[in-house]
Image (tube, rainbow, N blue to C red; front, side, top):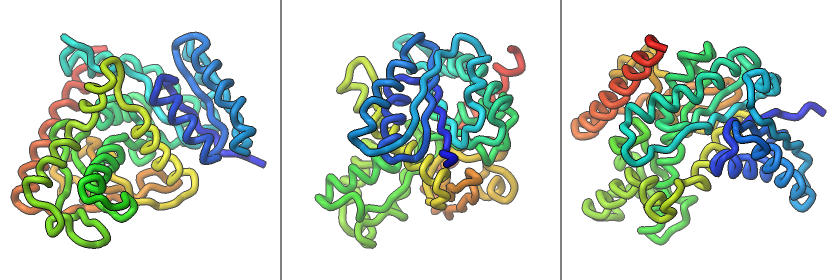
Amino acid sequence: MTRTKISVIGAGNVGASLAQFLVNRDLGDVSLFDVIEGVPEGKALDLYEGTPHWGVDSRISGFTTKSPEVYKNLEGSEVIVVTAGLARKPGMSRDDLLNKNIEIIRDVAKSVGKYAPKAKVIVVTNPADIMAYAFYKMSGLKPENILGLGGALDSARFRTFLAMELGVSVKDVNGFVIGGHGDDMVPFIRYSSAGGIPIEKLLSREKIDEIVKRTRFGGGEIVNFLKTGSAYYAPGISITSMAESIIKDKKRIIPCAAFISGKHAEHYGISGKFIGVPVKIGTEGAEHIYDIDFQPAELELWKKTVESVNSSCALVDKFLSTH
């Protein structure tokens, strides 16, 4: 039996949690990669030893990436998830973070282009939409084969906070967040509902605004609790949903960072970049992008997030032109 191969680059909290969720759902064999010697091998073996209790036959391997040649083990991957990167530290500017993370994923992008050019890639490294653009520029992969985490996680947080406030099941809450994966993301209240009932008929404007603010700073709230780390369970679960939709060709509509071009560029006012929009995800990656109509206030928020993404992508272009 030929099993699906999934590679996770970066075996930190997000990568290791993701590997656990992928194996638990029996989505395929998992390979973990990391630069810290022994960490991917140890975490892979530890997870593998627990699989008898889950009754899954996933094979889990770990590889320390001392040299680019190690990435030859990416060959045959259907899905590759890139979590490698730094979190922003005190005193580090946004530009510094961008440059550091571009450096980190440069070898990864080139190696994926060399050994797994047909793989579908989910970029998690922050800022995910901008790193997806950098990955695209450095890897040579088709843009529709690359997705960035962002809206999938932000939308999950948004739905969770709505369900908490309403005291209802998260299954019955629909809602999504588009735009850049940052403070200027755009939660779409008009398209949000609980059991088909519009959120605006269930909650006051003030309460909705509170939930929107909490969603925008959802990652920061986790950081404040943890003190020395950032979120990894919700990101891992969100990535798993995206990967599963690719592997099983589920055609799920999940907001995430996708490449905007053609008629979508005219509609969204951004071209040749990755930004969070509703995307149908299947075996071909980003199979369809849905255009969302904007009301005037929503359009102003959208223009702000587009400006932010364009500005950051210009920094990527500057870095790549000088390195």
